[in-house]
Image 1: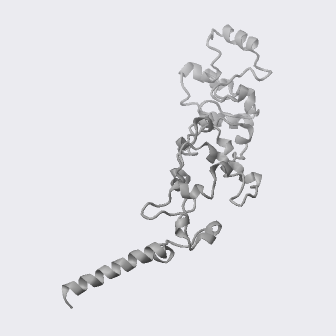
Image 2: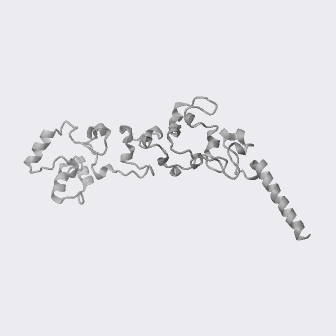
Image 3: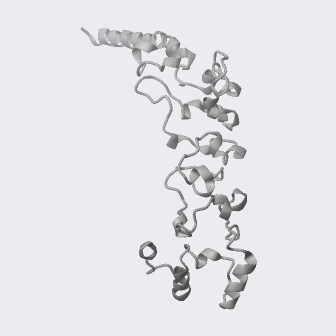
Length: 253
């Protein structure tokens, strides 16, 4: 067989592969089955894909109208209320569906949340975390409403940027609600005057008698309900060296 014949055979095979790819791509290049919701499109690749371009957002929006996402299905059926947290799509500043969504067996239908950029949301929605995320149900978070950004970043939920024990330790003398110390749901500030034992006039009088004039910044000296710790902090100027746990145990004994 001469070189010309070989070349013709190669060209015919390449042409056949191109034609098969264009007309029956589901058998040639599909990475796997579609998710159940898209099963009816299994033989119609071009419902989502544009040849040599990929899956443009316009193809997705042809079925999934942005204004209806999280509210009604593509068939017009109202979506159950517990799933409406995906209705943030209306506040996206850019239509780039494949940055978060994919399909096919072996390919994640929803990409890891670490790939989602909150910068795609309108600025007014970026701090309304609980409009999309379910609030934690532990004892601390059940008492807190909103203001997630004061302890958490948009890059990752953990680790939290705030450790309460760095400022104040809870003990049996301070079993109270968050709002007792953090007024108006503002966790960047606190007050000790929310307790009936800590009136401003009483605190002022007691501290001035001891020559203490900076008495508004309570946690500078009072890291807990232990008065001995406050005295230690005043003398040493720091928290190192004070065995708080040992003090707690001695009180229990």
